[in-house]
Each structure stands twice: as C-alpha cells, then as structure tokens.
Length: 309
Image (cartoon, rainbow, N blue to C red; front, side, top):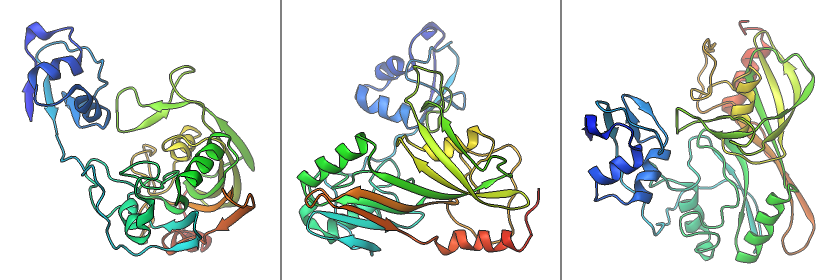
C-alpha cells in the first residue's frame, strides 16, 4: 500500500500519521508492523517516532497475521533428549521457531505441539514450551519445557545466566587473538528496524559474548562462541562488530564478502552444546550436537587450502 504524506503533515510522528490514515489498523498493530520493517519511508525503514517532512512516499506491507491458536503440524523432529518435564531438540537451518509475520506454518512450535500436545499453553499459545529460540538460518540445540513448572525453572535459569550455550561459527577473516570477549550493548538498528546493532550505553541491552579460535584458514576462522546473555542476533551482531561477519549471513555482512564455490544453506552458525539444571531432579544435564553437513562442507573445503584472503 503506497501513501503520500501531505505537506501539512510535516513534523508528525510516523505511527500517529498512519493511525489517522488507516483507522482499520490498531495502534499496536501499526507499531508491530513498523518494528518488523513492514513500513518504509522513501524506501527506508523508520522508527515509530520518526518525524515526517511532508511529500514522502510511505510503503505499508500488511502480511497476514499468524493464527492466534497454533495448529499442530506433524513435522519430523530430531529429538536429543526427552522425559516428562523437558525436551531437547536439534533444529535444522531454515526452520522458524515460532509463528511470525510471513511464517505462519512449518514452525518448530507447531511440530512440538503435534509431538507433545500437553505443552499447549505452557509459556504462551503461539510458542508452547519454547524457552529460548534460534534464528531461522541457525541450526542446533534448544530446550523446550513440557510443563509450566519446568518453563518457570528454565526461564529463571536463563535470567540467572546459568544455562550454558556454546556455538560454533565460521567467520570471514583471520581472527588474530586466540580468545576474547565482546561486551557491547545491542538494540534495534536506528535506521533499519529489521536488524539489530551495537548501540550506545543506555540505548541497548547489555550483551556479552566470549569467543575462542578453534582453526584459522587463509581468509576464514572457525570460532567457538559462548553466550553470557541472550540478545536477538547477539553472536551475529558481535562478530560483525569486530570485523568478522559469519559466513553466509546476508543481513550482518561486510561490504566485501567472499563466496566459496560449494553448496551451502543458512548461515555458518550452529548451537553445538547446551547445559542446564533439570527442573525436577536438580541434576545438571549436558548435550552436544555434531556440526551439520552444510558447515562440515565449508570446513572441509577450507582445510584443503582453497580459502582466499
């Protein structure tokens, strides 16, 4: 939907101007669309408080909302561990964790509800039992609560930073230091509401990632990354901030990007290890997931000395 801003609307906030022009959409829905990058002003995503000048073209895309009631879907799951309280799954790259704009079906949440119908209502109607998430193009381990008591315990462990999450990533460039810590706040990008970015103190939430070099190649490095916090796109944003974007990441990328002549899907980021205290037994459980074939192919190619600096 294309709209033209009248000259007399100069100085008005984008969200308030849209609320008047499109009364059929609630203010909360408009806010959701703007935050999701579905509203652009002269081709650029803006914040709800963006002040209009008058004369701009506003493009509004209103995707269908996912159903409030999640429909179970019999999608195959790779189950690493399961008992009456928790479920650990190994998510493939390309699968969305829970429904959202443009992703109403084929989600991990729908598959979980089909596999374990008793988790309906645990944590929320559209993300049953989901304690933490992985990006669509990231693969690996996540834990799901099968009861409300388990959900409360696991979310409390996440808040207390006692859940251990270890990732493996292939990044562009040779990381010089053998290990390091990125301690930089993350918040919404000021000009692109779909992306996250490093933000000044007070405008983002504290985010801490510890990394360690596992292998170096001609123009790439394989890293181990451990999360101390769990911000949206944290590892991707932090890797980019130190000049080493993750291979295959078209959202958080460097201006010059090397593409390897091999088949690859997703981004080269895998949640390889997960540990937490069992909500009922109090025993600490540890799980690991081998690198998927898509990332192993990248490493095999690089180990053969084909990388370009």
